[in-house]
Length: 108
Image 1 (cartoon, rainbow, N blue to C red):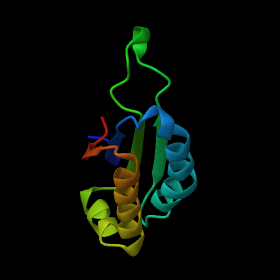
Image 2: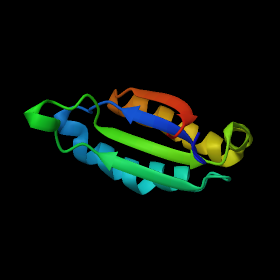
Image 3: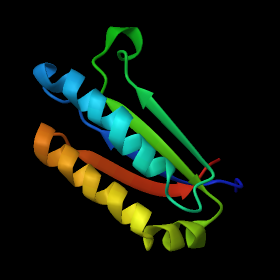
Image 4: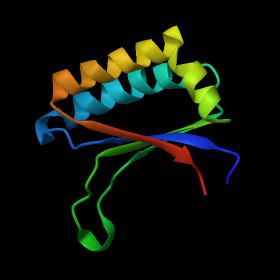
């Protein structure tokens, strides 16, 4: 087991005409909200340039939020900062028609 418990969020591709607006909101609003979550040890965000060997990537964005433990994540999820991030994710989903899948687990 690792010393990092992670939440991984996988964002689908917005419509081509919406990519710039999605990126502006994601980088200037959503990521700062996520970075403000208490108990967060580290955040990593990745934008797909393309799939390996020319394949179309399954996702547009990947975000990893690192916590000390499942209990630390649970505490963070009860915070107003988490709620603000969650509400903003719902705005992104509604405005751009994207989906976001999330999972949590130990890094190894």
